[in-house]
Image 1 (spheres, rainbow, N blue to C red):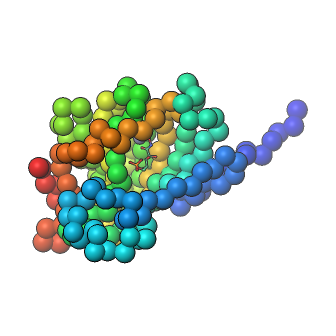
Image 2: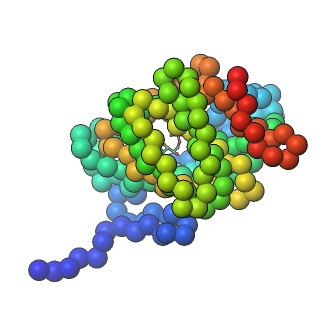
Image 3: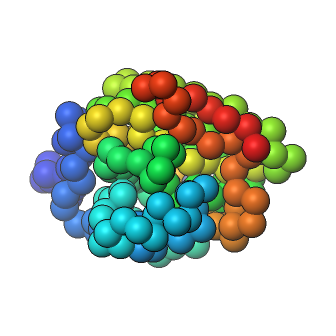
Length: 186
Ligand code: PAN
Ligand code: ZN
């Protein structure tokens, strides 16, 4: 039997994903209206500023039961007002679907919020491993001066529900106060 070369790669130090079935997406400040607390500060910034990029390997169609997706999120450093750059954040559409995140490089926080709005924050750093249980919204925040690079693995039928957070959003925000990152509750 032939031993095949693996059809894709992930670089362990950079999180780069290459090979077959790799998708790329990005979010700019212009696409993140209503996500940051200081909307005036956001709209005064260049709307083309890239806040984060996601590389993912999706070998089965979205929605396929039982499959897995693999991805790397690259969250650039920056702030809107005093609030650090962060992902939109979401619940999974299939609420019970869990996910793994792990830190590759940079430093930041993973915010987790259950359906009752009870929130916890975990420090993200190279090698940190984060189990995101079902029924839990998740958001990454880059509190450092370099890119925050985070790996992820989630179910191909998990789906993303951004709408549930669109109103009040996460119950905590991560802001800079006196040169350090603090979590402030609403
Ligand atoms: C991640 C996220 C990624 C971007 O792959 O989708 O970090 O964040 P938003 O989706 O909140 O914009 C994941 O959690 N997938 O399920
Ligand atoms: Zn997710």
